Image (cartoon, rainbow, N blue to C red; front, top):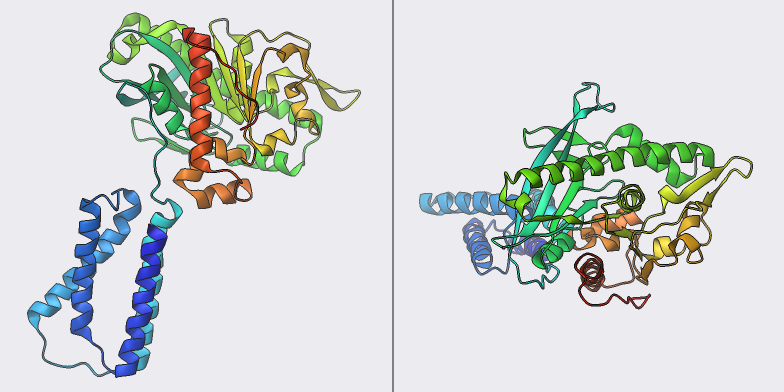
Length: 433
């Protein structure tokens, strides 16, 4: 929608400039009426929901309103003096409007309107955000040395009776807690209380309830970038993995323990909905690795979904070989792995994924699904929310329909948790989608 309207606007500006140059007139009155008509058309398209109002349209709406106001004032004043025609002036005005149009349309192009993934459950979904402060941890990344805070968002069955399993999500290396909103919404609509965590300084951006804003830490960002470039030795990388996973799993443990404590007190209707005996964890990329790690550490985790991540918890570094091998300890928590092409192609060639291999005896009961044609971010909502950003971050466009990919992924995750935490139905993924 944004691209289409921008093309129309650019064609109009160029055509009108040519018309003025051919007739050697300014045609100011016509342009004023067109400005007013454009604003009215924008309002009609918004009211009729052809344009779904959101932040992406704000700058365009302001521009159209200002131009319409200028045009209306000019028509009301009905100036009789005719401005001298100058070709250079017409050209420069057209060029200026083209640049202004591109700027104001950019949010609608970078973050286009899109059809939201299907929500198939019977429950209306409510949301709530909280900031939890861990009094037992001092933030080492920040110079202020205050207690570490963790921002969380809940998706839950609104106005529903009874209790429901708790699912905790951890985002990817540069992610945010909203990365898989369609997944959380679908799960909550079927009777789950879903909590997604922003890991401060690992999250691209997070904002706490008191207005504190935290961006991704530059040192951490550089570490991830260097890892992707192959800068580190395996021994150095193993040390970094331990550091990253400790921060992540400490956050997840803290959030789960806080929620369980609040659920016992019954101080909040949302916490009262939680079945504390049924807990699942899941995450994308580094968040998936942290979820598998937690599935090994905690006895109260009943199911784990790993989305496109290596089993960092199962890696053992062998100094004599300067390489990683898989742990020999059995993994008994029910596990479902979901892979894109980006990771699927590394399972046999990258030693970081040695524990993920299908022949690993410690994970012989795990389920696996491969989305053929998907890229790493196809397993999040980002390609729907911003195809341009997703393509830049993952190095190209995926060869899979994004709506099909995310809706199928959401359906599989729901069926897995239903089977493992609710005892509903059977779970038999077909392997490749």
